[in-house]
View (cartoon, rainbow, N blue to C red):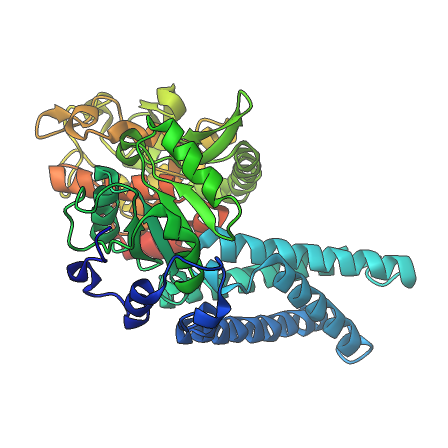
Length: 508
């Protein structure tokens, strides 16, 4: 068998080249006496930095939770030093302990919205409720203070989520760049191996290191100087030991079921993770995970943007929030209605057809901002800055998006959500082309309910979509929201919406 390809060693650590060259295949499989020392993954400086940062996050959590505890105590007129020091310490210790066990401070989770925001919020809620229940069982503490429990959960949750918003902003790729790379050995010299290397390099995957490949066929069947040939499959056990391999990637076509089964059977005694290279169809349409179906783990090519349980949560927030806002804003509704009637003839409200979830049609509620005789229900002409059809009151309403407030009715009836892509009228055109025909993936917006405000709006893409560039940018932000939905993202949009409206950027 040909010796390792020296050209393929370029860019590989010298320890790997030495181990690959010197490790023989004779003797015992695991020979610790010939083990080539490589930098331990656990001693990597990047990992040390990651854990230092995780410690800093934990210290900040302790500080915020302590501030919240005593702050809420003072607001609710509880003497801050009457057993409060002990009780506060218990709550904070309970939260930090549970957060650590839950993995909230695992460096690999930093930068993950679900891993940092949601887990921290859940743990804080559970910690406060567990402490309250324990106090009730012992000496009745908190029994007559439900408002304090609500304040602790609400204010503490907001501070923990807010801190993580800052954390992810400052360190967006923390997990990617500060966790150890996994060493990967490829088995198979088929064209799949070359394709894997191309994908690895094109996507800039810093989380794995392709060490080389093994194959029982004659060396040279894959002409790729970047991939190091390490010998026949029989050498895999000793290579795993010497090179501290983490993963073995079997790069055979799925049609070669017998070769795959034989190889996997050989590897099943080794302490590594064995992966099967995806078929071409799965590279063209990457799976989002695997699910049990018909008794097998099958690849899932697409999942709903919002899981059913979160649909219920989001729907409950929409219904309760819209009902409260309608009650609170009812005086403002009356003032706006009066101003519209005094300013021009015609109805107070403007109704227009829109498409919602799954392209389900509904009629949207808006305050009328155009002269009644120029109303354009089919959007033959988009409203633009300085449009002579807009009334004086309508200009003010549109500038600060007050004309959208009646859509709280659509939210209350379940046709819309507080947060989501803004709904467009079905016939709206750009450059003479209907939106759904102008943008190939436009229909992705119908996978969620349309919203009163959204990710595009708080990032400056509100107002008209009279040009292809404006429409394309808005759709890209809508697609980002759908692909990355979380309650934390909804909260961020909700908090930033007043500022985006006040700036009146791109309003028409």
